[in-house]
Every structure is written in C-alpha cells, then in structure tokens.
Length: 221
Image (tube, rainbow, N blue to C red; front, side, top):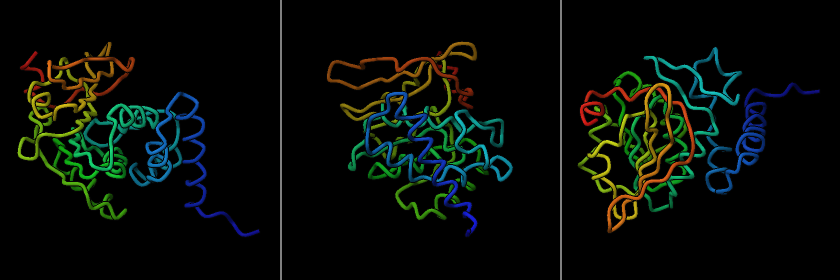
C-alpha cells in the first residue's frame, strides 16, 4: 500500500472539520463552507502545531495573539455576507488564515495588522497560496483604512470595549461590521449594519478574543 501523503491527510481533516464543526453548528452558506474546505489552515500555524490545525479550538501564534477556531472564522465570515463584488477590510491580519478565507469570497481585501513582522509573514503565506487580491497594511486597526473606504464588510479579529467610530464611518450603506465587543470576562460577537437611519446592532452570540492592540480603541470608550 502506498503511504498517504501529508497533503491528502490534511485535506481529509479539512473536510471532516467542515462536516463536524461547521455544518453541525448551523453554518449553511455554501460559499463559506467551500472556502473553509479549500484554505489549508495547517500552513498558517507553527510547524509544531500543524497536527492540531483542524482541532475545534484557537491556537497560539506570535506576539501573544491567536488564530481563531475554525467555527468562529466561518461564523464571522458568514455574518459578513460577502459577495464576489465585496470590498472588505479586515482588522488583525494575524497569520493570514482568515484573510485567505475572506479573499476567496470577496473582490478585494485590505488587512490591517499592528505587528509588522506578522504582516510580512502573513504576506509570504498568502503569496505561496497564490492569493493576489489582498493588500496588507501595518497600522492601528481601530483607525481602519480610510483611503479605500467605504467597505461592504469590516471584520475585526480582536475584542474592543465598543465599536470604534472610525470603523463604523468606513462602512458602505448596507455594509456590516462584524466585531467582538466586551472585556476579558464577557464578549459578544456583534454585527453593526449601516442603514439610512443609522446602525442596526445584533448579536451572534458569546465569543472570546484577545484584546485589540490599539490605544485608540480604548480611548473612545
């Protein structure tokens, strides 16, 4: 019998993850499920953690950050309601995993990361996968990225006490801000949709994220 290759083994793990962690918990968006089945999460974690890449939990990365569990990535992406024409702002590039998922679904993604080293490493991973519709920006995520606003979706991968006004202002009409709001003890995954009358807020349920590294995010509180 020919030994199975690591690539095939990881592919089976991705399919199992989609079936057991995403579909079973109510993720129904076919495009999101397809993107999660395609992006090789094992290439966005440290080599020592590759065997845990598809476990149902977040994993530690550098600079005290984490890569979110697959279900949370899928949930946030589904709540963003992306189309092939969406222009997306991501706050918190991290390893680039969620960036790759968003890029698979949207027209273009701008991703802001506080730590230059993490941004550079994420860029190398995305390039290796042939992802070409992502622009990486090093800066304060709470400030957003005004030069390319407005966005049809803004996805924030770290928690804040309240949604930063600059991010809300960079949403297009009908656009959605998906963001963890709360403190270290209690957080909710919130969705703010920009309407002609203002912003409509809904909760997608409790969550747990590391805090956004941004003095501006806490000054607005």
